[in-house]
Length: 277
Image 1: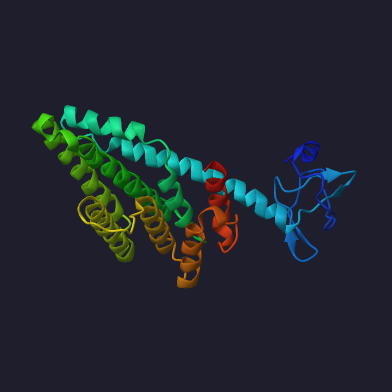
Image 2 (image 1 turned 45 degrees about the horizontal axis):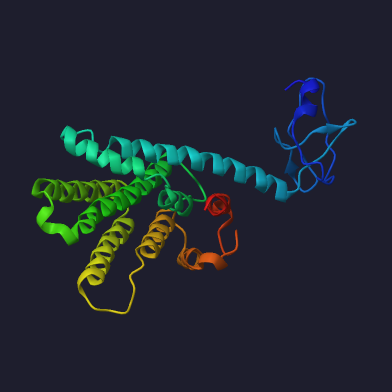
């Protein structure tokens, strides 16, 4: 970096001085000064021959920006996976599923997985596994919506085309099976078990809602959110107390506070989800 480029490095105007380091004409040397802290590119600027050193809160803020950028990128990868699930199907069935996927635009469940599954030490393998898990949960919701199309015509069963009804069932079942295959790509037995338990909860809850007389409502969205969070935090390798704290936070609904009870390295992603909800 040339000396005349130093002043272009951004820094919040309110940042206090935390130390002074030397700037050399040949470039900027990274050195530890005061509390063994480093100046890193983009984290300071020269002002009148001296350097401002960013406090921890600003370093954390820059890190949050980085994780939010990668969250957006990973959501794009999830969309690509969803777009490719119908490649081997008959054109008519493929187009039917693609139409449902196109209607599925929120990607909130996938974002929850990508936030919960973000580990303290990331790697390409970890990234691939959480993207597959996010795609699995999103495809699961597509399968649920396809099966619910049959319920919309329940009052006119005699007029429902049997071929259409059969195709709807097959399309939903296909999405369920592909979602399970994507979850299996995590190669994490406990995550796969959580996904299987989720399928059981959804089936039993919807059957009770349809056929059993009960005053207890079935909140499908809450079940999906909790299971997505549980699977994600398990994949990230969080200890049980932190998994429990994250599950409690996701269940607080309107009472949840951004950043509270969450591990530091996941707060940027959870904050982005809250701001977009």
